[in-house]
Length: 510
Image 1 (tube, rainbow, N blue to C red):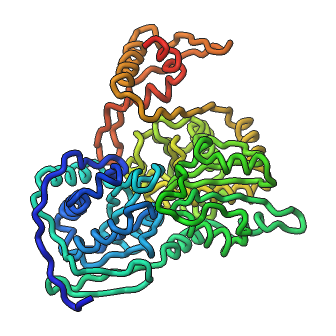
Image 2 (cartoon, rainbow, N blue to C red):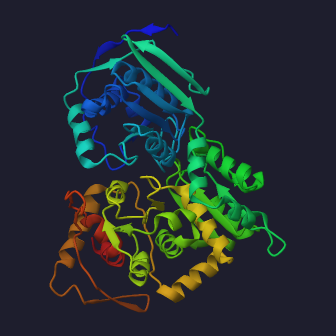
C-alpha cells in the first residue's frame, strides 16, 4: 500500500427502507450486495456522528457470516475518507457483540459498527445486518437511528478511499496518510479484551475447580455449543485454555459464513443437537449461543431446560456468588415486558428495585448508565449485566457456573429450591415465522377488542381442565425514567405474550 492515498466522492442513488430497528439494519445478503447499498448505509452512520466524526476511533467486527469481510473492507475505505482517525478491528473481522461493547468501553471510542444479523441464518441466500453501537457500548437509541435513516433518504454521494486495503486476517497496526491525515487500522486479537474482562468479573479458579473436580467432588461435565457462530474462538480460549475443559465438550466452535447450515438461535428447536446430546450423554450442564454471541440457552442434566425468565430470576437471587457484584452491589433488576415475572418475585423478596422495559437492550442501557440497574434479561434468551451495554451469552454461562460452584448442586436442584423459595412463574414462548401480515393484524385487532371489554379483567378462561383468572389487560407503553423518552404501540408484544392462551383460543375463529 502506498504511504499516501486520496479519497474520492462517489455519486449514488437513494435506497428506500434503510431504517434501522432496535438491532440495526437487517436485510437479505442480496440486498446489501446491491451497488452502493452498503456504502450508503455506512456513510449515513458516519455522517450521523456529526461533530464526533473527525478524529474519531471506532470498533469494527461481526459474527463471521457471509459478506462480513467484504463489508469490513468497505467500512475501512469509507471511514478513511470521512476523517475517522482509527479503526479497531477484530482479526478476520470477528468480534462478538458483547466483545464490541467491551472494547468500546475499555478504549473509550466513539462507538462501533457491528456486522451481524444475530440469530438469523447466514449464507449468500440468507441474512446480513449492520448495527451501530454508541460510545456507551450499547445499541444506538432512537434519536440516533432516526438520524441515520433521515440521512439515507437524501444521500446523493459518499466518500471513499478506494486504494486503502488491509489484510484483516493478520494482527497488525497500520497507519497511512489519507488526504494528508493519519489513518490507523489496528487489527487485534478478537478474544483478549473480552477474556480479560471476564476474569475481572468471575472467580475462574472456583469455576475451574468445579469443572475439573476435586477429592470431594467428581468433575462437572459441560457441553458448550457455539452453533458455528462467533463465540467459537471465545469458548475455546475460555473453556479449553483457561478452564481446562476437554475439546470434546466444545462443539461447533469454528465460525462459518453459513453457520454450517445451522440456524444459530439457541433454543429447543434450533439447538436440537445440544438437547439430544444432553439427554443421552453424561453431561451435567449445557449451553448454546447464537450467531453473534449475545443470546444463550442453559440446560441441566438430561436436558433439563431453564427458561430465559427463570434463568434471569435464579441469577438475580444468587448474584453474591459472583465477585463483580460483591464489589459493585446490586443496584436494580430489569426485564423486558414480554419476559415472565419470575424476577419480580426475587426483587420483591430482596427489596431491590425492578424495572419493566420494552424490547430492546438500549432501554436497559439507559438505566445502567444512570446507575439504576445491575442485572437484566429478555425472554428471547438474552441475559446481561452492567459490565457492558449488550446482552452477553458467555457471561450468562459463566454466571451460571459461578452459582453452581457456590451452591454445590445441580441445575435442576437449584431451580426446584428457587421455586420453593419464591414460587413459580410458568413461561412459554411461541415463534410464528413467515406469517401473513394481514391475517396476523386481523388476529391482533380481534384480541385487542376483546381485552378492552369492561368485564375482561377478572374473567375466567379454561383450557385442558384448568381455569385461569385474567389479572390484567393492557396495551403496554413505556416512559423512560432517565430521559423521558416514550415507547408506545407495544400492544402486539403485550397481547401475544401476556395473553397467549387467549390468542391460541381465538385464532381458531378468525
